[in-house]
Image (tube, rainbow, N blue to C red; front, side, top):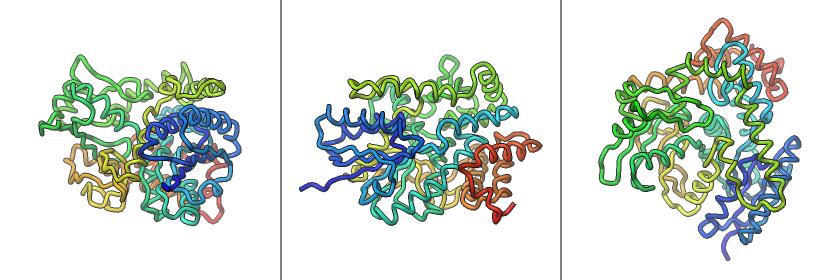
Length: 444
């Protein structure tokens, strides 16, 4: 008799859940999931019910013997789990609105995973993830944690460094989308180009080599950044402003989020204009999500609707299913994930998390060695990794001094005069989710 496979998804009421379910259905022959537990909190109860019933319809339509359980009891769900996926948003989209609105109101980049907003998303998320890990140590000590909660790199590092849990892999859809779209741009078939990603989440670079051993990186750069073609693969980055001359000199393709660092003034001006005219990106996402849940309510809907792609984050959940299947079957699938550095990038500490191309095996992610970056990449990378580590430390300790250092180091928090003002305003706005910063024993 085959082993019964139990997967627990924390943040099960997410609008992304139908894609996750679709991924498990498509892989049932290689990963015969028997139990899917969707877990959420009281505030997400209604969404959990809506998306959970849709998940049941999808499973029924696919005619696979998998039970779908909906619960607000995380510990009951985690008991004897084989895999745990996390797709949670502490404070829901209202918290993201604050992450974007407060910095923008002070003339500063307001973005979900970068700058002040990214720091505060990490501060709210890390304590919750670490509490999940503590439950896993007790209830499912052999399970793998597959995280695609942003900021994925910092969350993964917190699990490794402070959770002392090495069975963790972090996922981001940016490399996934890049591989699909750039393979097509090169006129090649899926799997015929090896993309070597190296860096950290939302701050990586990559090269491309085809199956004949030809380096296609410079060709790809010409096609992506030549005068007639300047695409963006990220829904919330309106215009990819990276210029051909700079990228050609890098001889590596940068992540679209580099726009925020190389062209901060232009990105900020666009954000402020959009903010004044239409509000924050988070408010738009909230509207899209409300429309999705109206679709999900339809008792006849038993498949993932195409509108989900508009939400941003396309292919996240499918990538999570592929990671899980590759671990379970020791498929040695090549994927780009956040994992322990352990010498992969010599410019960064061995015990930090990096986002790198890896083989996904029964032992987890086995990274392809990269070595050292040139100064034109290394400088920004090391600054951002130090900023991440300060943020993670602040999330765990509640030390405002450490948090202020992270703020002052972040290149997108461009005014030292108002950094502390924004920090304190955001702490107060998110006080409900950040009790450690308001504990009288915390260092100030």
